[in-house]
Image 1 (spheres, helix red, strand yellow):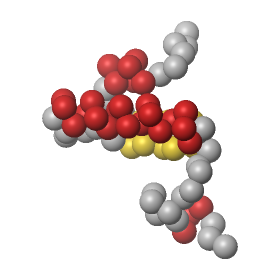
Image 2 (image 1 turned 90 degrees about the horizontal axis):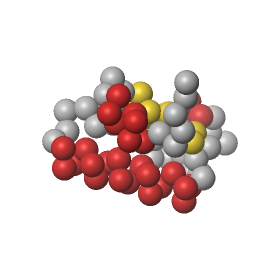
Image 3 (image 1 turned 180 degrees about the vertical axis):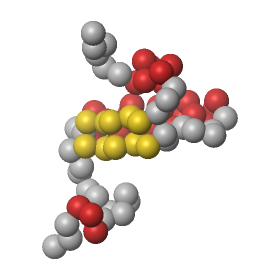
Length: 69
């Protein structure tokens, strides 16, 4: 059996947590929207949490389920 550090991103099945590192950096606005739509569609279907690492607070505001603070 493989341990998590031995898996590539495409090998994990049914992850409880998806960590994204700047998934939309350097993409044009259209592709950026498609990536965010895909993450929004997959999140409830896979029943996974998403940690979005990005300096773009607009994307964070668009993707978060609940405001903190």
